[in-house]
Figure (cartoon, rainbow, N blue to C red):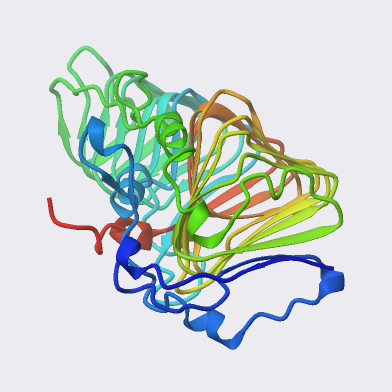
Length: 395
């Protein structure tokens, strides 16, 4: 049964000249009603529409969604607390605009505001900034290393391709530094080998901006856009996915939209084909599955509060284009990702713990308060997110 097909007049005057197709742009349907999408759908906002400007004009300049993404997702992984690993952890990078992911790409930075403790191999393709390091297996860093504390692990080794700055003792079995190693005079460099050794103070680093007074707050944007959104333009009922049974698909065009909640025992699919921002103040609580399907020219900035729970399989974005999906989570409720899920996007949840079940492969980036993983973790940073603000207005 087809539940809704909404038609509307062109809304270029509101969002810019790019969105000009007056065809169905928001449809909600279930499998028994068919999945026919008009041919014009692929043409709608074919050039992605205008940049999305978010926020409250009365409280300051509007925020361009692309600039927000490239600011918060500069690293492949950021942890506001320490990072304890019991299985292999590997980070690298690629550019989805160049081609699909291939192993061994250079880049992929990691930031850990507290200590890194690892019982298995850690491989970072880019730079590593950390509060201190305790190793039981080898560490390999493809860029530079900055540590606010010691590098310890008497039975193992670390290799750093670039420079290393260590504000503590080096008590590893071996440390090889391709560039300059800097250790303050009061600490021992141990068995380190480097192109040059400097004995001078090492400035402290805070790689991830997690402080309450300075971090980005998704809650403020969510609150504002619960009343300032484009739902009325396309006839979208914000409660339309509050009780998902069976399979439900919601297709959205470019614009800023509100769903009060996505919940129920069924499988919900969000299909995005334009530059879209979606605000969900009541969070996500689905039993069967959630699919977020974003294909060119689509991009999705998803802002949610109230929890993010998918008991079954989560399919977030595409491994071929992870830079096009950005998720911003307000609040402290843990985020649980079940084994077999696809996480292909950029996740910002500085107050929440992310729990990954089984071995996990992430295409995109993670910025979380804390990461817990029961298996091996691979993170492939899509460096295209660093250019997400290219279409934003000049300051």
